[in-house]
Length: 339
Ligand code: P6P
Image (cartoon, rainbow, N blue to C red; front, top):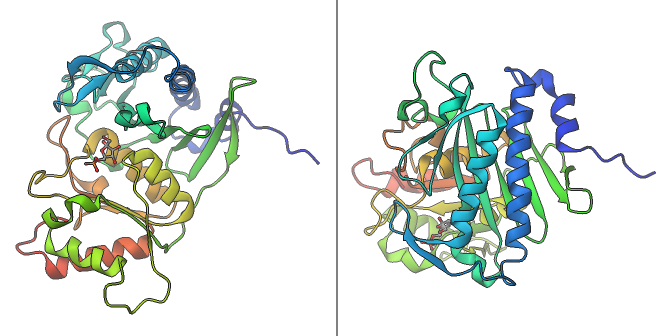
């Protein structure tokens, strides 16, 4: 018996009781995020064919060269969110300051966005992703400021990612579990393909950039020794999987079990990954799938942001693996240093 296809729109309406705010507002926002991702899907899948590769020559706030597809994705998402009518402003990795939609003063939500994470991998055909985080404005009668975005991750009303890989998937949560939708390009719809995603409580995949190993804290180095089984105590060795595209690494570990780590280091004493539009939204998804996400000591979603583009160390995934990492950090790191 062929299973009925449930589209993203049908799913949101069906589950409207779960979203404490009017589901029409959420469906409007997710619909427009889905629309923009279909546009990006089209461009990413032909990136090798047209002259959209190569850098624009500009750099973003982090000094990283913006690839043409970064800029294209940023513009596509901002345009779709502006037209949605439900979004009052956007904070994007590709823009130094927030973008306030003047004609949307009544809109209730703001969106923090990494429009195309891992874009340096586009030229070598590795999966890339979009990450989004949705907050309710602090006060609808007050003009939008950075403060509407500088809310702890526990205040997110929805969050998720789109992965542009062997297929294009949208994975999101509103705080009632995690569901994955695969794009069927033949009908232009995201269809429910991974209902109620739960991550394994333990796993044998660890994801970290080993090249920086000597620059990590003693606690993280101790955990890496545990992973490579340097004491020979574990029968089945772990596998190290790291492709340098956070959405792809997190998605794989979410499904199969594992831990993703981007610690602080001598070069990056506050880590590299951004709290607002990478760590918080992915932590919300991972926690809702039964995983945990910490900065080495504290829950990521309880951190109080102070700057739009601030970074933080991050360790997220199967709870038993994250707990082992946490124990290594509190035992071996001096002076209450994070991971
Ligand atoms: P490194 C991509 O540039 C990114 O922001 C994440 O997607 C990825 O996990 C990380 O940086 C990779 O960083 O320093 O290991 O190359």
